[in-house]
Image (cartoon, rainbow, N blue to C red):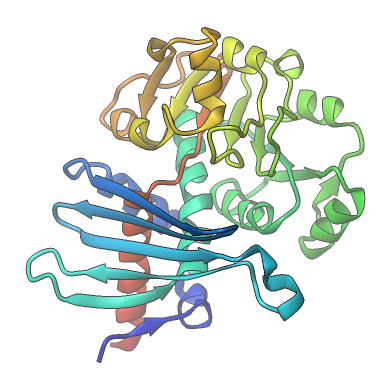
Amino acid sequence: MIPVLTRADVEPLMDWLDLIEALVEGHRLPPAQIKDVLLSRGDDKLLSRAAWIDGLGVGVKSVTIFGGNAPRGLPSVQGAMQVFNDETGEIEAVIDSDLVTKWKTAGDSLLGARLLARKDARKLLIIGAGTVAASLIEAYSALIPDLEVTVWARRAEAAEALAAQYPGTKTASDLEAAVRAADIISTCTMATRPVLKGAWLQPGQHVDLIGAYTPDMREADDEALRRSRIFVDSRATTVGHIGELKIPLNEGVIELSDIISDLQQLIAGGGGRMSDNDITLFKNGGGAHLDLMTARVIIARWRAAQS
C-alpha cells in the first residue's frame, strides 16, 4: 500500500540541520530536469511542478489555488506531492504539499545563509509575519543556537502575534532601524513593490529574499541589488521568471554576470562571500528539484520511524 504522509505523521521526525545536509548532497547529483505546468479556469488555478534527478527519482507536486475558498472555510491552496522510484518508476509515497513546501522553503534559505552569511551572524530580522516567517524562526534557530530574532510586518498586530508564539522574539516598529541593526535580513512578504531599501543595508549583512515568486513581484529595490554580491538557489527557476531579478535585468540595473553563483556552484566551491564586509543577497526561488530533495528526507524519516 502506498503511504500517504501528512504533517502530523512526519513533522515531529524532521530536523533542519539534517535537511540542509541532504540538500547539499542533492546538489552534488546531476542537475535536475524541471518543468512547471499551470492550468487556469478563471481565477482558479492548478500548478504542477515536476523534477527528475538522476539518483533521487521523480517528484510531482500539484496544488490547486482557489481564491474563493475562504467563505467555504477551506484553504485557498491545497495539494499533494507524488514521489516515484528512480529505477522502476513505481510510486513510493504521496505527501501533504504543505509539509514539503514548509521544509523546502525555509531549508533553502537556511542553506543559503549557512553558505553566505558571516560566521558570527546572530541577529535575524524577518520582514513578514505569515506562515513562512514562523518556519524561518524555527529553521534559523536550529542553525544559530544563540539567535536573536526580530519581526517586522505592515500590520503590527501580526508581528506581535507571531512573536508571542516564540519566546524571546522581538518586534520592530521602525523598519529602517531594524534593517540597519540586523546581521541577516529575511523577507517573506506578498509585496509587489520593494519593501527593503538598499540604502539601509550595512557592510557584512546577508539578505535572504523569499517572497517574490511571480514576474511582477519584488521585495528589494535596485540599490540593494547594486550593493550586493548576488546569488540564487537555481538560475533555471529564478532568472527570467521572478521579478526580483527579471525586472532589474530587463532595465539594465544588473547584468547576468552579476549573478555570481547558484547553490550547485556554491557547494562545488564557486564564488561565495569574499570578506566580512560583503553584502550577500540570496534569492530563494524554491524550484521543484528542492521539493524532490525535501520529499526524499521526509520519506526517509518516516521509514526510519517504522523500523
